[in-house]
Image (cartoon, rainbow, N blue to C red; front, side, top):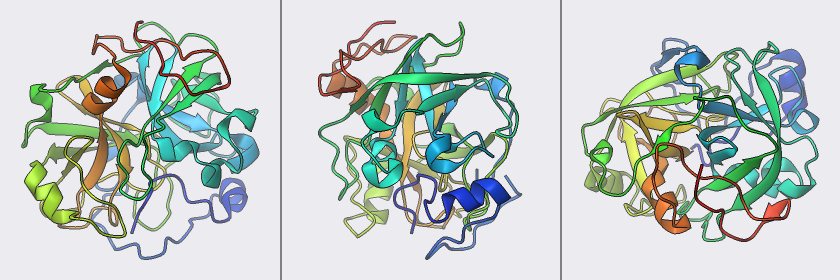
Length: 298
Protein backbone atom coordinates (compact mmCIF):
# COMPACT_ATOMS: atom_id res chain seq x y z
CA UNK A 1 0.00 0.00 0.00
CA UNK A 2 1.22 3.52 -0.70
CA UNK A 3 -1.01 6.06 0.87
CA UNK A 4 -0.01 8.83 0.82
CA UNK A 5 3.00 9.23 -1.49
CA UNK A 6 5.08 11.50 0.72
CA UNK A 7 8.60 10.36 1.49
CA UNK A 8 8.46 7.72 4.23
CA UNK A 9 9.22 9.18 7.65
CA UNK A 10 10.70 6.10 9.27
CA UNK A 11 14.34 6.89 10.13
CA UNK A 12 14.43 9.99 7.85
CA UNK A 13 17.68 11.36 9.25
CA UNK A 14 19.43 8.01 8.87
CA UNK A 15 18.26 7.83 5.27
CA UNK A 16 19.52 11.33 4.58
CA UNK A 17 22.86 10.84 6.29
CA UNK A 18 23.70 7.40 4.96
CA UNK A 19 21.56 7.18 1.80
CA UNK A 20 20.01 3.98 3.12
CA UNK A 21 16.85 2.53 1.59
CA UNK A 22 13.79 2.40 3.86
CA UNK A 23 11.77 -0.81 3.40
CA UNK A 24 8.11 -0.04 2.87
CA UNK A 25 5.45 -2.18 4.46
CA UNK A 26 3.25 -4.03 1.98
CA UNK A 27 5.24 -2.79 -1.01
CA UNK A 28 4.97 -5.10 -4.00
CA UNK A 29 7.76 -5.70 -6.53
CA UNK A 30 7.45 -3.44 -9.55
CA UNK A 31 9.02 -3.64 -13.00
CA UNK A 32 11.64 -0.90 -13.09
CA UNK A 33 14.71 0.06 -15.07
CA UNK A 34 16.15 1.84 -12.06
CA UNK A 35 14.49 5.16 -12.34
CA UNK A 36 10.08 7.28 -10.73
CA UNK A 37 9.17 3.45 -10.99
CA UNK A 38 9.57 2.21 -14.57
CA UNK A 39 10.81 5.58 -15.79
CA UNK A 40 13.90 7.39 -17.06
CA UNK A 41 16.25 10.21 -15.98
CA UNK A 42 15.40 13.75 -17.04
CA UNK A 43 17.17 17.08 -16.66
CA UNK A 44 15.17 19.71 -14.81
CA UNK A 45 15.75 22.12 -17.71
CA UNK A 46 13.27 19.98 -19.64
CA UNK A 47 10.63 20.50 -16.93
CA UNK A 48 11.67 23.66 -15.05
CA UNK A 49 8.25 23.86 -13.36
CA UNK A 50 8.98 20.63 -11.44
CA UNK A 51 10.18 21.56 -7.96
CA UNK A 52 11.12 19.76 -4.77
CA UNK A 53 9.78 20.61 -1.31
CA UNK A 54 12.52 20.73 1.28
CA UNK A 55 13.10 20.82 5.03
CA UNK A 56 16.61 19.96 6.13
CA UNK A 57 15.64 20.30 9.77
CA UNK A 58 13.04 17.57 9.34
CA UNK A 59 14.52 15.30 6.63
CA UNK A 60 18.28 15.90 6.74
CA UNK A 61 20.46 17.58 4.15
CA UNK A 62 21.92 14.81 1.99
CA UNK A 63 19.12 14.97 -0.60
CA UNK A 64 18.56 18.71 -0.15
CA UNK A 65 15.96 17.86 2.50
CA UNK A 66 13.49 16.72 -0.19
CA UNK A 67 10.27 15.07 0.99
CA UNK A 68 7.64 15.90 -1.66
CA UNK A 69 7.30 17.38 -5.12
CA UNK A 70 5.43 20.37 -6.47
CA UNK A 71 4.68 22.25 -9.66
CA UNK A 72 5.07 25.96 -10.35
CA UNK A 73 1.91 27.41 -11.91
CA UNK A 74 2.83 31.05 -11.35
CA UNK A 75 6.04 33.00 -10.65
CA UNK A 76 5.47 32.76 -6.89
CA UNK A 77 2.86 29.99 -6.79
CA UNK A 78 3.45 26.26 -6.36
CA UNK A 79 0.83 23.52 -6.18
CA UNK A 80 1.49 20.42 -4.11
CA UNK A 81 -0.48 17.74 -2.24
CA UNK A 82 -2.36 18.69 0.93
CA UNK A 83 -1.05 15.60 2.69
CA UNK A 84 2.52 16.90 2.20
CA UNK A 85 1.63 19.73 4.58
CA UNK A 86 0.24 17.46 7.30
CA UNK A 87 1.61 17.60 10.84
CA UNK A 88 2.28 13.87 10.65
CA UNK A 89 4.69 14.63 7.80
CA UNK A 90 6.22 17.92 8.94
CA UNK A 91 6.16 17.27 12.66
CA UNK A 92 4.42 20.62 13.18
CA UNK A 93 1.94 22.89 11.40
CA UNK A 94 3.52 24.17 8.15
CA UNK A 95 3.57 27.73 9.49
CA UNK A 96 5.91 26.59 12.27
CA UNK A 97 8.44 24.93 9.96
CA UNK A 98 11.03 27.69 9.65
CA UNK A 99 13.08 26.09 6.89
CA UNK A 100 10.27 25.02 4.54
CA UNK A 101 11.57 25.77 1.04
CA UNK A 102 10.99 25.05 -2.63
CA UNK A 103 14.02 23.82 -4.59
CA UNK A 104 13.90 24.86 -8.25
CA UNK A 105 16.30 24.25 -11.11
CA UNK A 106 18.08 21.31 -9.42
CA UNK A 107 18.27 17.95 -11.19
CA UNK A 108 20.62 16.30 -8.69
CA UNK A 109 19.58 16.69 -5.04
CA UNK A 110 23.18 16.11 -3.93
CA UNK A 111 24.29 19.30 -5.68
CA UNK A 112 23.68 22.98 -4.91
CA UNK A 113 22.61 24.12 -8.36
CA UNK A 114 19.41 26.08 -8.93
CA UNK A 115 17.64 27.98 -6.19
CA UNK A 116 16.16 27.34 -2.77
CA UNK A 117 13.28 29.74 -2.13
CA UNK A 118 11.55 30.11 1.22
CA UNK A 119 7.80 29.50 1.42
CA UNK A 120 6.06 32.65 2.64
CA UNK A 121 2.50 31.34 2.95
CA UNK A 122 0.74 27.99 2.87
CA UNK A 123 -2.90 27.38 1.93
CA UNK A 124 -4.14 23.84 2.57
CA UNK A 125 -7.47 23.00 0.97
CA UNK A 126 -9.96 22.94 3.88
CA UNK A 127 -12.04 20.46 1.89
CA UNK A 128 -9.27 17.84 1.84
CA UNK A 129 -10.61 14.48 3.06
CA UNK A 130 -7.78 12.24 4.26
CA UNK A 131 -10.08 9.18 4.29
CA UNK A 132 -11.12 9.29 0.64
CA UNK A 133 -8.13 11.45 -0.47
CA UNK A 134 -10.47 13.89 -2.23
CA UNK A 135 -9.33 17.51 -2.56
CA UNK A 136 -5.68 16.67 -1.97
CA UNK A 137 -4.01 19.99 -2.80
CA UNK A 138 -2.20 22.89 -1.18
CA UNK A 139 -0.93 26.20 -2.54
CA UNK A 140 2.48 27.54 -1.55
CA UNK A 141 3.33 31.22 -2.01
CA UNK A 142 7.04 31.86 -2.41
CA UNK A 143 9.04 34.67 -0.85
CA UNK A 144 10.38 35.65 -4.29
CA UNK A 145 9.72 34.85 -7.92
CA UNK A 146 10.97 31.85 -9.82
CA UNK A 147 13.03 32.44 -12.97
CA UNK A 148 11.14 33.45 -16.12
CA UNK A 149 9.78 30.45 -18.00
CA UNK A 150 9.74 28.19 -14.95
CA UNK A 151 5.93 27.84 -14.84
CA UNK A 152 3.38 25.65 -16.62
CA UNK A 153 -0.26 26.17 -17.52
CA UNK A 154 -3.11 24.30 -15.83
CA UNK A 155 -5.66 22.19 -17.71
CA UNK A 156 -9.22 23.31 -17.01
CA UNK A 157 -12.36 21.19 -16.96
CA UNK A 158 -13.12 19.76 -20.39
CA UNK A 159 -9.52 20.01 -21.59
CA UNK A 160 -8.75 17.17 -24.04
CA UNK A 161 -5.60 16.40 -22.03
CA UNK A 162 -7.87 14.52 -19.57
CA UNK A 163 -9.19 12.16 -22.23
CA UNK A 164 -8.64 8.44 -21.62
CA UNK A 165 -5.68 7.15 -23.60
CA UNK A 166 -3.79 10.45 -23.56
CA UNK A 167 -0.07 10.01 -22.96
CA UNK A 168 1.16 11.83 -19.87
CA UNK A 169 4.43 12.15 -17.98
CA UNK A 170 4.86 12.14 -14.20
CA UNK A 171 7.96 13.69 -12.60
CA UNK A 172 9.64 13.26 -9.22
CA UNK A 173 12.59 12.35 -7.00
CA UNK A 174 10.79 9.57 -5.16
CA UNK A 175 11.21 5.83 -4.69
CA UNK A 176 12.38 4.11 -7.89
CA UNK A 177 11.76 0.49 -6.89
CA UNK A 178 8.78 0.34 -4.54
CA UNK A 179 11.13 -0.61 -1.68
CA UNK A 180 12.40 2.78 -0.47
CA UNK A 181 15.28 3.45 -2.90
CA UNK A 182 14.92 7.21 -3.27
CA UNK A 183 16.26 8.86 -6.39
CA UNK A 184 19.19 11.23 -6.33
CA UNK A 185 18.25 12.86 -9.62
CA UNK A 186 14.95 13.85 -11.21
CA UNK A 187 13.05 11.03 -12.92
CA UNK A 188 10.03 10.79 -15.18
CA UNK A 189 7.71 8.04 -16.38
CA UNK A 190 5.40 7.94 -19.40
CA UNK A 191 1.93 6.70 -18.50
CA UNK A 192 -1.55 6.95 -20.02
CA UNK A 193 -4.64 8.64 -18.62
CA UNK A 194 -7.19 5.96 -17.80
CA UNK A 195 -10.97 6.03 -18.07
CA UNK A 196 -12.81 7.03 -14.89
CA UNK A 197 -14.74 3.77 -14.96
CA UNK A 198 -11.48 1.82 -14.84
CA UNK A 199 -10.24 3.91 -11.91
CA UNK A 200 -13.54 3.51 -10.03
CA UNK A 201 -13.29 -0.25 -10.48
CA UNK A 202 -9.74 -0.24 -9.10
CA UNK A 203 -10.66 1.94 -6.09
CA UNK A 204 -14.37 1.53 -5.29
CA UNK A 205 -13.85 2.44 -1.63
CA UNK A 206 -11.14 0.66 0.34
CA UNK A 207 -8.71 1.46 3.13
CA UNK A 208 -6.51 3.06 0.46
CA UNK A 209 -9.16 5.57 -0.58
CA UNK A 210 -12.10 6.10 -2.91
CA UNK A 211 -11.77 7.24 -6.50
CA UNK A 212 -13.81 10.37 -7.21
CA UNK A 213 -13.85 11.40 -10.86
CA UNK A 214 -14.68 15.01 -10.03
CA UNK A 215 -11.56 15.60 -7.94
CA UNK A 216 -9.21 12.89 -9.20
CA UNK A 217 -7.67 11.50 -12.37
CA UNK A 218 -5.76 8.25 -12.61
CA UNK A 219 -2.99 7.14 -14.92
CA UNK A 220 -0.74 4.16 -15.46
CA UNK A 221 -0.45 1.09 -17.64
CA UNK A 222 -2.70 -1.99 -17.68
CA UNK A 223 0.28 -4.26 -17.04
CA UNK A 224 1.69 -1.96 -14.37
CA UNK A 225 5.39 -1.17 -14.10
CA UNK A 226 5.21 2.62 -14.57
CA UNK A 227 4.03 4.79 -11.72
CA UNK A 228 4.77 7.43 -9.11
CA UNK A 229 5.83 6.18 -5.69
CA UNK A 230 6.75 7.34 -2.16
CA UNK A 231 8.42 10.74 -2.21
CA UNK A 232 6.73 11.85 -5.45
CA UNK A 233 3.66 13.30 -3.71
CA UNK A 234 2.57 16.69 -5.01
CA UNK A 235 4.63 16.39 -8.18
CA UNK A 236 3.15 17.06 -11.63
CA UNK A 237 1.39 14.82 -14.12
CA UNK A 238 1.69 16.62 -17.46
CA UNK A 239 -0.17 15.99 -20.71
CA UNK A 240 -0.21 18.02 -23.92
CA UNK A 241 1.94 20.71 -22.34
CA UNK A 242 -0.34 21.33 -19.35
CA UNK A 243 -0.39 20.03 -15.79
CA UNK A 244 -3.44 17.81 -15.29
CA UNK A 245 -2.65 16.13 -11.97
CA UNK A 246 -0.71 16.19 -8.71
CA UNK A 247 0.71 12.91 -7.38
CA UNK A 248 -1.65 11.87 -4.59
CA UNK A 249 -2.21 8.20 -3.72
CA UNK A 250 -2.64 4.61 -4.85
CA UNK A 251 -2.06 1.00 -3.87
CA UNK A 252 1.53 -0.17 -4.22
CA UNK A 253 3.82 1.23 -6.90
CA UNK A 254 3.45 0.02 -10.47
CA UNK A 255 1.09 -2.83 -9.63
CA UNK A 256 -1.14 -4.20 -12.41
CA UNK A 257 -4.73 -3.13 -11.80
CA UNK A 258 -3.70 -0.44 -9.28
CA UNK A 259 -3.02 2.76 -11.22
CA UNK A 260 -1.67 5.92 -9.66
CA UNK A 261 -4.29 8.45 -8.55
CA UNK A 262 -3.70 12.17 -8.96
CA UNK A 263 -5.48 15.28 -7.75
CA UNK A 264 -7.35 16.59 -10.81
CA UNK A 265 -5.99 20.08 -11.50
CA UNK A 266 -9.27 21.19 -13.08
CA UNK A 267 -10.86 20.65 -9.64
CA UNK A 268 -8.19 22.87 -8.07
CA UNK A 269 -8.97 25.56 -10.67
CA UNK A 270 -12.71 25.21 -10.01
CA UNK A 271 -12.41 25.13 -6.22
CA UNK A 272 -10.23 28.24 -6.08
CA UNK A 273 -12.07 30.09 -8.83
CA UNK A 274 -8.88 30.44 -10.86
CA UNK A 275 -8.71 31.09 -14.58
CA UNK A 276 -6.54 28.35 -16.17
CA UNK A 277 -4.17 30.84 -17.83
CA UNK A 278 -0.77 29.88 -19.20
CA UNK A 279 0.71 31.12 -15.94
CA UNK A 280 -1.54 30.13 -13.09
CA UNK A 281 -2.20 31.66 -9.73
CA UNK A 282 -0.38 34.36 -7.89
CA UNK A 283 -0.16 34.87 -4.16
CA UNK A 284 -2.11 33.72 -1.15
CA UNK A 285 -3.68 36.18 1.24
CA UNK A 286 -1.91 37.48 4.33
CA UNK A 287 -0.70 35.09 7.00
CA UNK A 288 1.95 32.37 7.15
CA UNK A 289 -0.78 29.71 6.96
CA UNK A 290 -3.68 31.14 5.00
CA UNK A 291 -7.30 30.11 5.43
CA UNK A 292 -8.51 32.38 2.60
CA UNK A 293 -8.46 31.14 -1.00
CA UNK A 294 -5.36 32.25 -2.91
CA UNK A 295 -6.06 34.88 -5.57
CA UNK A 296 -5.78 34.16 -9.28
CA UNK A 297 -3.37 36.00 -11.55
CA UNK A 298 0.30 35.81 -12.55
